[in-house]
Image (cartoon, rainbow over all chains, first blue to last red; front, side, top):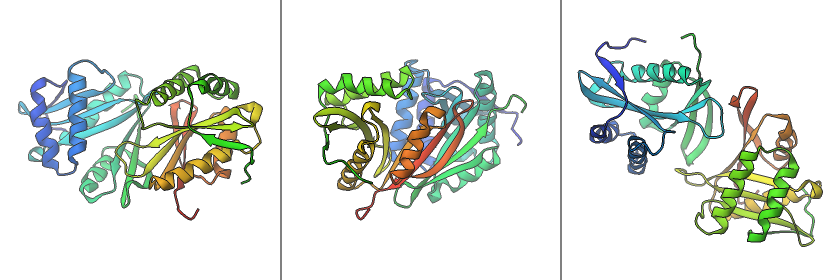
Length: 165
Length: 165
């Protein structure tokens, strides 16, 4: 897993909202209502009203290049969901997704996290996402057949948070 | 699956709150914070403020004997979670749990539901619940090892909603 030295991971700023929305749209993987949910969470988080959603942005050469949102799953002790991870397609294949996951793993370790899960769809627009998570150290845990809709299954990946990596 | 003819399944009433709480406590399977969540949902639902949680109560000979709470999972089309099902231990072994599940399956069919899931814990107090769901037509889908806490896994059961059952 190589990361570019020019990538930096930092907390979100209000001015990230527009490039974040543009990145989500550019991936072509998300429905409008999903993008609306992502922006609602961004607003909640940046307003400081809900600390349960942690946003981190990736910058490449000073420009917004991608982001992720993760948080501890309610009613668990130390299990986290990686709710969103998106890289602007203009900045693809530069290790930005891996840099985001690496930064999350460090933070989860500091927070005494034990597990992190990510849920994706079986639909074709998520093919690249599913193979990305396997390369990023996650393993396939389960497929919920036809969960989202007929022909649209939920695929769940899991990764242990280990202090040693 | 035999159901007692004296069992009736009906929408909740405000006066169900106390026997519902007593039933949850009497099972010995729930933490206080879980009971608090169950009561919050009951209040939300009976106030009419949140139609996404459907409560149904079981009566045996005119007395509250158990209840369930289910709802469509957000961002899905036709996938439901059975969030809670509890039978007052005083009324155990009379088919009340099965009568509740049967009533839910009929309602899910009417609502064009396709799937219903139930999540339980691997801890010993849930042994009876897990074997109940297998007898009630669910199949084991997946175990999330150590999900809730170390040694406390999440066990997910699945059942198809079929008009023909």
